Image 1 (tube, rainbow, N blue to C red):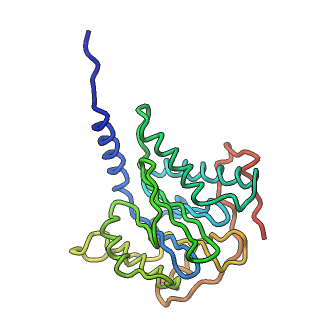
Image 2 (tube, rainbow, N blue to C red; image 1 turned 120 degrees about the vertical axis):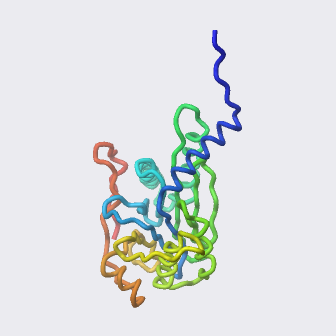
Image 3 (cartoon, helix red, strand yellow; image 1 turned 90 degrees about the vertical axis):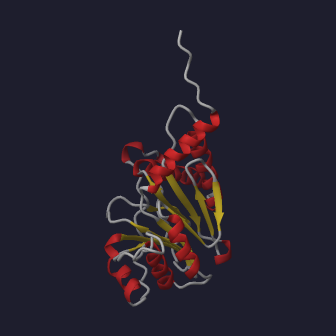
Length: 264
């Protein structure tokens, strides 16, 4: 009788981590950073339909890199978690830390399980606080590790090179236009210091904010089209376009607790 094939647990975890990192490295980067009036999300994404940045709840935003189908499953699960908790208790009980903990448990369980492959994703959960000092940015990796980032977070295959540019230009209290321009300039340097920066126009970007100055309870809004072009060129801050539709959940899987009406 043949002996079963044995792999040391340390080697198995290393192989799973290498597999996940290779998948994440193929994706374009995402930058999440704090600015004077909220939290900014900037991703290199030329698709108009497949978003890397989304709203989870009133003051919660979500950003991801990696395999789209996997982080879309996480986004949907986060919306269900937030809606159920807000419906069962109170809307103020839905927090970024609670959502990050739920994601960490899920990702950690999948990574350590031998029955399925690890998720090839990195995600950020951002919570807008009443003041800039209370804003929270949580970065989660494929193995369920959680980091509480101070000021900004960068994800994706070129994160190290982009982080250097963000670090050099970032300061607390940046205006929206300055923050967007810094993020776009940083994304364009993903080739490292020895490579020429790329040209990234509005059509190559996905930009959104959690805006503390917004009067509506739901603080998330997307910046695109002429609004984004103006921010990139002359620094004009776009007007608030008003309420947007709630984040989408696949219709076949909707539960009555997922159906919430936007306030205001």
